[in-house]
Image (cartoon, rainbow, N blue to C red; front, side, top):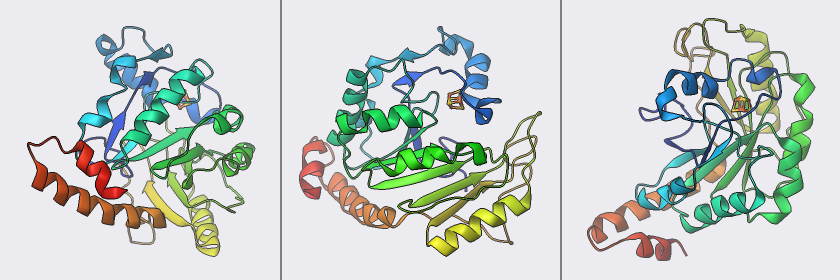
Length: 264
Ligand code: SF4
């Protein structure tokens, strides 16, 4: 089921310490972040120009409910105009809020690889790259060099058949493009990725077929919903239950510290 807060099936909420971006590959052609920026232009005075929002850095600390947080759904965190010091601040907030899972997705695979050594990869940080067609499978090689607990691929919008090397990859998300000018996704491409995931024992998540709207063609594949998640997710969920109990017990007593202690 699509998440009611984000409309994105694989996360619970979004956090945008930066907004705005520049297009780098065919997957960007109908960028939904750019479309949202135009539609709600009063909320984005700088339009789609890369903009840092330092005032949003602390937001996840105020969200007591453990959540899967998509970082920078309105940008690309590894955009060349995001300074390394700002990235370090973002990673520091993620370190300080271990009750959340953070899902970062980039098309800037080379910058990701270059900067990875300067960042602290705590277990609650999941790192992914977009792979829309076979010309961009080299992004996966860069991702493999990143010491994230979970490394994942977003094959959305899927624009062609993919032959993937899934070594050290934990999760693959597949989805078709939506919108008036959507580029149709072939069912054979989806079947092929699903089979490769099954062969490599990698979790497979089918987001949607796409069409004029995201829900136009639904998300059934072989008459079922594919919502597989990486193994790390189950472990984290068990911790969530403990956090939630602790939060309830400590409600009104400033529970952030006790939450952190309970997971140590
Ligand atoms: S990298 Fe992502 S946010 Fe940036 S233009 Fe491309 S699709 Fe949009």
